[in-house]
Image: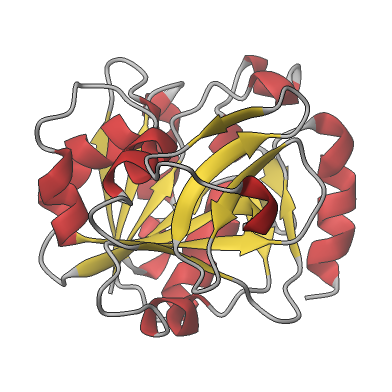
Length: 242
């Protein structure tokens, strides 16, 4: 199975740790954030892994080579400029095509999710399936009764974005995106006309009108974004219970 680990970010919320290393190489558990994700992917049956890199990309390349790619097939998609998630996937598309679908995993997400089960549980008509959960945030994805994506909202500002005319937000399920998704090769085809850099959520919201994008809620999910200093130690404690 194929997967991509998104590791190109600047890691500004983890400064000063990331003043001299990329976010992907922030120490975590017995290794780094990157090794934690790669080893989980490897142990879940993913044998063809892409890592996108920009900030301190040379250190990521050296780290992977110095650790024998952690016993799995790893290739690096180098980005001269930050491309946002949509642009990163579009650039890495030649490496990701071939199996029909692939997993996308943020490098700073730690969870107990059954990754292989998540991929296998996606619906055949979906161009993408997003891991979501019922947690408090300011920005939510909106889903209908069948868990099909129909919009996005910022509950603090009241902003709503949707390609579905007359959408009644009060009747939608509001769920938070968790940084793990399963995308199909069809979605990569739909990205071809897009610019070099673009947000993947914008892509999903536009395409969801014609092509189903679904949300996926995992029972018993333990998950945490390790993108900020104040969450790093808490994430380490959570990881130790998984």
